[in-house]
Every structure is written in C-alpha cells, then in structure tokens.
Image 1 (cartoon, helix red, strand yellow):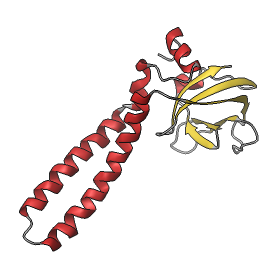
Image 2 (image 1 turned 180 degrees about the vertical axis):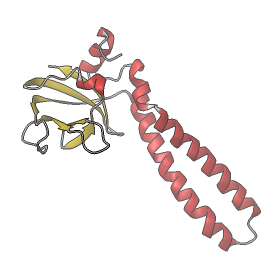
Image 3 (image 1 turned 180 degrees about the horizontal axis):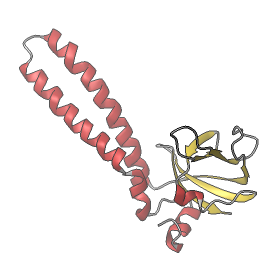
Length: 164
C-alpha cells in the first residue's frame, strides 16, 4: 500500500493518502469507538434509573470520565485520518542494532533481540519519540542513509518511511 506512486507523492507533500486511513482507523480505533457508544448507553441508562443525585454522581460521573477519554482518543485518530496532514522527520538514519536508542541521530533503528518466550521486535526513534516498527515499514527503511519518516501528528502513529 505504501509503495504505490500516488501514495508516495501524497506523502512527500506532507499529506495522508486516502488509502492510508486504515492505518489510523484500525481495530484499536473501532474498539475505542464501541467503548464510547457503550459507555454513553450505560451512563444514560444508569442516570434514568438512579433514585437520587448521589447515585448519579457515584456511578455516572466516573463512567463519563472514562468514556470521555476514549472519545478523545477516537477524535485524535479521526482528525488525523480526515485532516490529512503528516509530520515529516528527515535525516540520517543510524542502526543502533540492540544498543540503547539515543537522540544522537535524527532517526534511529533498534532491534530487541529474542528473549525467553519473546519474539524479536523492532522500533524506530524519530523526533524524540519511539515507535514500534512494523515489518512492511522495516523493509522500506535503509540504515546509514537519509530517510524521511512520516508521522500522524495527533495520534503519534508511524505512517510511512520514504528514502529521501
């Protein structure tokens, strides 16, 4: 998906291509959206059957606070998906291998070795933040050269990697 010419052209101009919205509106988004709807339904139901204000404050207010947090998370994802702007971090990419990641380079790659009952995982550090690096993006980035990393600004999700 990220290697199509129209996707790369949109990303180079700092825009999210419509085909990349699925990276933001993934299963985690839909689970949070379902929790928002369920939280609102339960809060309204509890408020209707409550006999006094103490019951409402004791049950509905905390439930609405949690529901509000999930709504905020959903809003950030939706704003990124339909706002379409991406934040680009361009710079020399250094492969730290299994050593500790630092901000010495604009973009850093890190490999967490296999441990007891764990799989090998990869991460990328750019702009002072560390992101999990999926296999499809790991295959695109090349260490020891200049790359551009594209990040959704509100939800802080790694969207694409382009050779600069």
